[in-house]
Structures are given as structure tokens and as C-alpha cells.
Length: 261
Image (cartoon, rainbow, N blue to C red; front, top):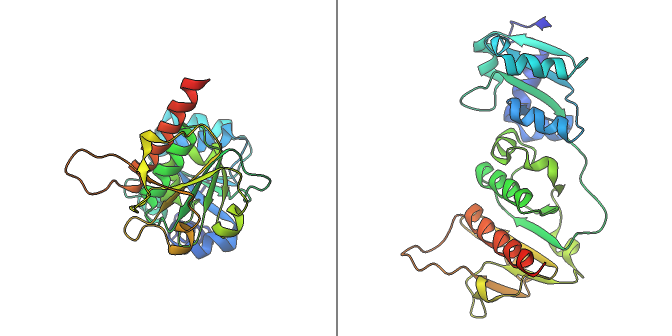
């Protein structure tokens, strides 16, 4: 394993750029995975890292050493702990980073359940939605204008491996992609025709529209909805976090489908 100790090393500059810059990630087609769990999830999905980066303290952890062995001939470098923290995308470095070539956007027809996101910018919320969608058995997630990068390190961290079980499409025009969808297009919006989530039949093909944390859905995307949805909240709360709202909706759909199977 090659040691690297200088901040001026081109690799360090590249890692730092992947950690901080959406543009650098787009231009290079790469991102950073932080921690053993994410690297293991990528390997389980058949994705081999392009490079592994380990801190000096990480080399003393048995689970990291075992993962290095599992990756075989993948190039690996070791960094002093301070330099590793400099390139890490998270506040509490795990001791292991992997440079991953970002998989291409999915293509082909949409499945019978689709999550479509409009302007979801918070990395934690976006990662939570992706993790929830994967857990609920959703296959297709569309990211429209204004969303955070799905493959940004902090989104990956929040997604906890959910990315690798989804068919993701980024920077899509939601009206164009969803035009002609043969099923319900539902949006959790406050409008006169909104119906209780628990009064809806969710067993058929469904697109779920979820919008930005503050502004909600943009007018053009909101107009796609064939039905407004209201999540009953008997407590004294005006609204739910978008990640929580997505979880409630997706698992109510799963409950209905499981009960009718």
C-alpha cells in the first residue's frame, strides 16, 4: 500500500474536490464512499471501487483490513489521520474512503411505483428518502430540477446503501418523463381536493411526487398530480419533514399491497 503524506499530491487534491464539489464529481464521473458499510454495499451490488483510501488508524481495524483484502487488486493508499480528515466528506471520518465511478442513469420503462423528487436539496433528507424507497421495495427514483446530487458523499452516507438497490435518474424533466404514466400521480399538497392517505386505494401503479423542504412542489410539477394527498396529523403539527412524509406514504402503500396479496 502506497503512503501519501503531502496535501499537494494530485490525488489529495482530487479527493478533496470529490468531497466538496458537485462540479468535480460531475466532470470526473466519480464520487466518494465513506465507511465500511457503504463499500460493502457497493461490492454486494457488483460495483468495484476505483481506489481505496485508508487512514493510519483505520489500518489497525480488522474490518477495514478484511475489506482491503476482499477488494483484491484495487489500488489503495494510506494517509496520516490528519490528512485523511482533510479529504473526508464527513465530520467524523470513518478511516476508509473509496473512490467509485458513478453508475450511469437508469433507462427503460418505469416500474409500477415511482418516487419523483422536485427540488429536494438537503442531503440528509434526500438520502433518507432513497433509503426509505429501497426499504419499501421501490425500484425507480427520478430526481428533477434543483435536487441535490444523488451520488454526493453526504447523500450516500444518509442513504446507507439504498442507492445500490434503486434505478436512479438525475436531472430529469419530470413532466416529460411522467407524461403518459398509466396510473395515479399523487402529491402530498394542501389543496381543496386532497384526500386522506388512508382513504386512497394505493394498490395500482403510482407515482409519488415529493417537493422541496420549504417551497414544496414547483407549479409545473404539482400540476402533474391526478390526486392531492393529505397525511392525517391529529397532533399540533403543521407538516412533516419530506423524508418522514415519504416514509409514511410508501409504507402505507406497501401495507395495502401486502394485505391484498
